[in-house]
Length: 296
Image (cartoon, rainbow, N blue to C red; front, side):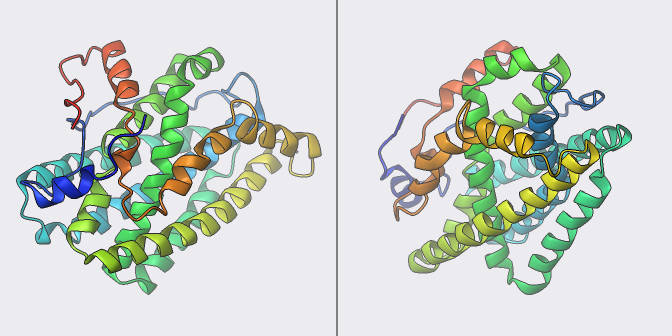
């Protein structure tokens, strides 16, 4: 559900620069996911989609950490500083666990090393060509992508549970929950270190670039993963991918409103309040002590 769009501005002009609506912490968890070749219900196409996402995470999460860390010295607000610390912890563990996952997928015969190298080259270009605040803008846009995809996955978690083994379910739900918990941190840091016009222009530029290059990368990653199963020229495989992403369960179709909301000047990641999904997962995992903060 939507909350008052003016909430972030009230937070920024009050006692904190943080607009986060959930307490959160880094969870030092380890997983054994990725030991089966087609772990999503025996489906090589949907499995390839998740594997392509995972191939981006180790280098991507390190980039996220570096861009936020580079601006940390400009932040004085204790609440936002505490959230930065937990954000860095969560992202570092995501990078570690997805690297382990990718290594297991590679052992099943998939070219994860080649795909990870492509991601490293892309991120290396951003590091060399973009100023630090522009790099942070890319992080903010990519965090928006991961947050809206995480929201879709959490909304479909019972369906996802039915189609996967416990190891994969636990890894992807854990990651989705933590992406939701810290979805505003990089955004709030960029907002704190930017003037209003520069902040808006930076994040609009970033979302356009991210949309273009993320989708190009995903296509290339999927092509390489399909090739390992002899499916790169299969119309049926590409149609199956389209059906999964855009029809049922349709995470990309369902994410369109959240994606477009980014272009609203008063947008904040917690304008879409999905704390209930995080709380449900916490209760399932014995974390009922970490409940959602009261509504603003």
